[in-house]
Image (cartoon, rainbow, N blue to C red):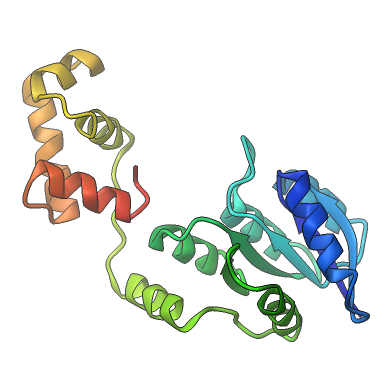
Length: 205
């Protein structure tokens, strides 16, 4: 019997998944949580084999943070991410945090069931095309922007000019230009539009 914990901030999603797993004799939903914090507390008091976790869980910990925290617990269960979001940076963050797989919510019910079984056996669960994206992401140098560079990038994405960005952030226009030089260099961007697009692809915006 595979003991499953459902972690999703939408009750209707948890209800649907519970109904699905009730159809299989080897699957047993032992609990439901709406946040990563609740999941950590639950796991420390109940035996769980696989945690089926959403990526975005409201104001608290996200799926990647929850996965990393669960992995530090004694006898930690496997974590399988089930979400609607498929940005490369988010997928990579979850895998690097120790997730046993990453599924999108538009997959078939049998795929979810098979993935639960595979995760329980310690196997990695990723669609072939997602595997290629994860490997590509691991080969790329990680882009890290400072908090202020992210602030400048967010202002930049609204379409305003350097003068307006400087006014919004209470800095000089020269400081904004310096930040942009660093942002362009880190993202290897050729233009403002290119920088915004690449930042979105990397999950920085």
